[in-house]
Image (tube, rainbow, N blue to C red; front, side, top):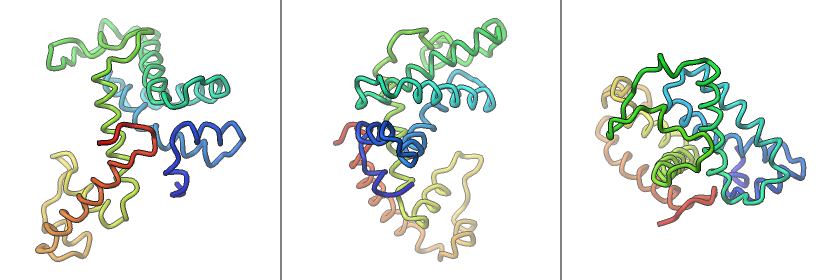
Length: 201
């Protein structure tokens, strides 16, 4: 995605989309596709079903874009729509009785937390926004830093040791620690600059 589009906030991207700029639409989808996908996956949909939700949500966004009254609240609109579409898919598939009771910390069923039309709980929205902001910052890092941090902070079953990272990146093991610190500093600076309209610290 071009850097100039990465730096635009949601309202500016929406305006470019309404002007028929295809690159702006691709940038908007790229910015929020992981967020929408995460909402569906948190309801324990499989990847194929979550992809269906993703496609439906962005199709609805394309339809509603001309009437979107608060472009700066686009993230909230997308998450609420994603949860509604997820619930509709679960109902259509008649999966309520057989869906796994994936309990959260409060012991509540994950599916029961998907409101039909209610607004998204603020704390969950903030959590998703923060995850999205980190991913966007990671996308904007130089490839070497992005690859290093991705390997270092991958899920436990996919995480590589320093010796493997050294071989893959052609980097001496002794330089991985200092390079990691520099890359984390870069990531932090990019995270604090949130072109999508999120909070800054």
